[in-house]
Structure formats: C-alpha cells, structure tokens
Image (cartoon, rainbow, N blue to C red; front, side, top):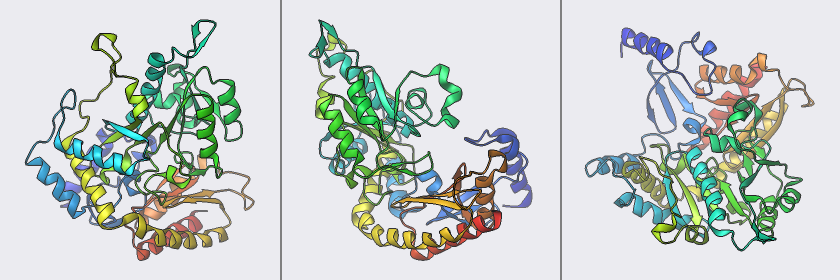
Length: 438
C-alpha cells in the first residue's frame, strides 16, 4: 500500500466513521490506527507495523487470527449457502451447532435460540423470562389476583449490553444514566443484600440476571466465592428464574468453558456470544431449560409463541465458524492447555504491585484488570480529565501492543492461544507503559 492510499484511508476514516465508545473530538486529532490483516495473535496496520492483540479484538478472538480450520470452514460454507432464515425452517450448520452447544452447556439447558450479539442474547433472555411468567403464573395468586412477576433484579456495576432492555438491567451510571428516561425500572442489588431483596420482591420478580463470577465492563470486579450458589438457592426458594450473562466470560476466558462451572451452578437461561465463533462472525445464543421452553408451547390460537427474531438468526456462515471453533477446543485441548498459562500470567502480574500507581489487580483466568490510582494507598482515583487509561494504552500501542482501558483500569484479555513468550511481551509492554505514563 503506497503513501497516497494510506493517507486516503486515514482521511476517510476521520471524516466518515463514528467509532463506538470513543470521544471523536479527540480521535479526529490523531492519526488513526487502521488494521489491514491478522496472523496468529498479532494484528498488522496499513503501515506494516505489527501489534499483539492484547484484548482479543474486544474479547472475541479465541485461537488467534487466520486460524486455518475456521478459515476453511467459512470458505466451504460459502460454496453451499451464505444465509437462510431460521423463521420456520433450519439449516445444517445451525442444527449441528445447537447440538454442540447443548453438549458443552450446563446439563439442564436444552434449547438454543440464536441471535447476533451479546446484547440481543440478553434482550431475548429478558423477554423469555417476562413472557414465561405472564403465560405460566396462574398458580401464583393472592386473593384471586395474579402476581405480576414483571421485574428483574440486577446488580450494581452490571453491564449486559447497549440495547434498551439490556441497558435497563445495567448498573454502570457512566454508560447508562443518560438513557434513564428510556428504560424500564429494575431492582438494583449488591452482593450483600441480593438474597434479602429477592425475598422481599419475590412476587414481582421474573428473574435475576448476573454476570457469573466477574463483572467485565465494570473493570473486572470479582464476586465473593460461593455467591452464585447462594443466588441459585434464593431463586429456587422464591420461585424466579436465574439468567447468567456469559457473553464475556464464556468460551474459556475464565479458565473454564463457562464461568458458572467454577461453582457448579446451573442457570435457567444463559446468554452467550463474543468467543462463540472464535472472533470471526457475529453470532449469539440464548440457552433455555426445557421448562422455560415448554412454557411457550400451546395451540396456535393461544398466541403464546415467542414473537422475537432477527434476520440473520442462525446464519450458516457464522454457525460454521462456531462449529470449527468448538472443534478446535476439543482437538487442541484448549481449556486443559490454558491452565499452565493462567498460572504463568498470574505469576507475571506480581511485579505490577511494585508500581506506585497500581492499585488492585483483579484476575480470573485470562481476564485481568489493573487499576491505576493516583496515590500508593489506592484510595484516590485519577480524575477523568487526566485520561490516564487512554494515555497508558496509547503508550503500549507505540510499543506494539493493542489494549483497551475501562476508565482507569487497564484490561488484559488476550487470545487463549497466547504463548508464554507472548505473555512476557504483553506484561512487559504493559508494565513499562504504566511506569512511564504514571
């Protein structure tokens, strides 16, 4: 690519693209980083410079870029059919993938409803839970009146996506407060008072929704050990559904295929996306129990159908990529081989405590959050105007690593295929970037 072509791309990017979660006032003043290709765990820009993909291209890349088996699966499917609707009919990859997903999911989950992003998978779970109770709550009465069971209990610092329903059950003011007039009310809990709120609102609650084990977009916040088991027990005792949002935590990110496996807890509905295709194509799914599914079966005239769908639901290309992705998990024993790398990563993070402006370091599997603090005691955060997280990741970019901060938290969430040498490089660049900028 010659200099004129490069300049044209950079100019067009600044002039036409509105980038997500990006203050464009700042972006327009910078030379944009435009990726041209990927290879393994590395990305290459239009200048030919290479970067380690330290955030798995926003938490989706699992086995690296240009994985031969996934490339070939998508190419082979193109020679058959690129898309066919799932409304009232099916396709081969979607059918085979559903079997695979049920095989690796918690054993009580029996049905797969496809969509195209993590946010839509959450919207579906919310609507399923809501409609399920409207159609099946006749046995729960007080003085002849049905309970409403129309609300959701969610958690402070929760993030479930950016569509209206998922924002309504979110708990991060930075992302969600501006849209408050558009949202439905949900009951916000902490890990300390959730069980009490469930008991208090059991007649009105349709479901509890939670990111199991770790809250991603909040800055990789860990939950108390044993909390999921307590939550499952409380939902069972008070007759409401439990939804696990495994969009970020699924497909090996925490060291298990799904985060809920750490405590052996089974949800009634589970949302999955991001790593499902290995980072190739948009795909998501909402998994449900047989009981929830049966709550929608009725004579056609009863209008109990789940009236929800997406144009690209069960897209054959995406499902083919997902099938290849899961076959690689089996063939390469990805989860098993990840365990020593998790230990190596944890050991390498210890040196970050020597940096005077590093506060808490939070980690679960290959998900890491390094919190930057203005004081050594970890009590004073950097103000927004310092843009400390942004400055650190831009320094890392100069040194050949792509990172993405969450405010003052530097997130490391690399592909599971990272080698020990690449872990060293990732940690070395991150350490030096934090040291220099702070």
